[in-house]
Length: 436
Image (cartoon, rainbow, N blue to C red; front, side, top):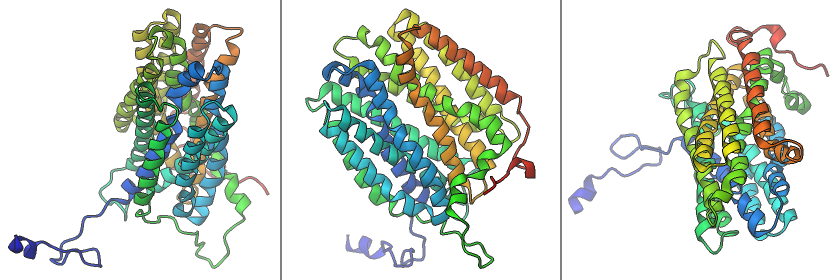
């Protein structure tokens, strides 16, 4: 044993072993992805518990759907402020608050299962954390997935890694929460405790990721521009963004919310005693297919057209049509099929939108434009509350049919800009800064 120990390379302070070989380190992008995963877990663990709050706490469908969408009130400000600020001051300073906010959110949710006010506050804090990681973290992962941080990464690896981390967090957070709530006596507390522990552990891992975007150096000795100019995100006026990204963005979470927030409330009565578990199953199916479609995105995406977005929107229309059938028959198998297709549409929409954004934005505007994209995408989380409100006048099959028609209209709008205003050949008219 002594002989073996004598020949084992020992680490040196310069990052190399004493025999001269390079020491293997945790990739920076992997460390940053861990926080995307943990915060996404915290953001979606609430979703399968909607049925539990409705049945055990006596809350109405409208109330639980409002609580579902409440975290958008945290997400959007965090996106719109955190993204541009990280373009100005760096990724790390704006990511540090994310795990703290996530822990506060989960703690509030755990402490108030019967209090709408505490649940609302917890959702807002979870949203603040998620908004930061989606704007800042996504950009950080993209930059850590290219030279000099990861010379072997393929084009588009950053978008796929970031979206996959988020989707896996959404998936496992929902499934774990549903399983714990279904089979544990601490159904309203333990799911959130698990997230708190996970977030703290992965925050330590995140601390090892290097900074990729230090405070802007203009190179001409001038001071940085006005903060207000950064917050305006002029890249959001790029014609490609307006004509391709804006029409598709709300469908990202509109599709997923339909799959695992609306359908469970319609069909859960078919599995009495296992309502929460069934809700978790629909989350699992939808997000598992979302993961699979994200893996296929590299074969569908093209930097020369809006092909990936058109395919994703077409898949959304098919999913909404299947939701019409599921809402009409109220059968478990049909709900599972609709959730699978809507989940696949969500995954492809998320990645294709990120890839369009990353092509449009320059390096100094990436987080800001990503923030605008996600803010538009999260409007889709108001779909369950909107449908619940409209249910007084329209039935769900009719509303899903209208959704399918709107998805097809979005296909037409995006297809009309198939090759127009591509950012590979910038047109000065495409990117206009607003006048002060």
